[in-house]
Length: 103
Image 1: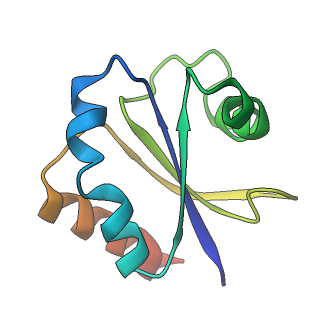
Image 2: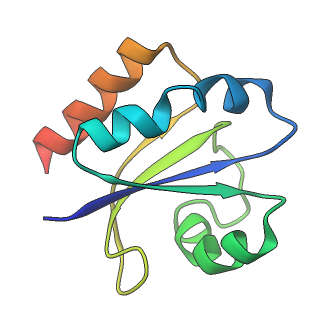
């Protein structure tokens, strides 16, 4: 199954910026497509807004950043897992690996 990981973040989020140094690399190494959606990037946000709002209709309870693991992000997507908030590179790799293994 082809999986994508959509990262929802903000330019104003220090944790989001810190994780950007390794998140895309880890995601690629684990065989997933990385999609970076900054809330300030209106084109990308509009494209993937429906995915985010299906999980967080009013954005309440989401972490910064929020990573959603999805199949078919540009079509009839299905959210298969999520990672909320910042964490060290090793912990991020373990969390994402567990989601992928459980699919």
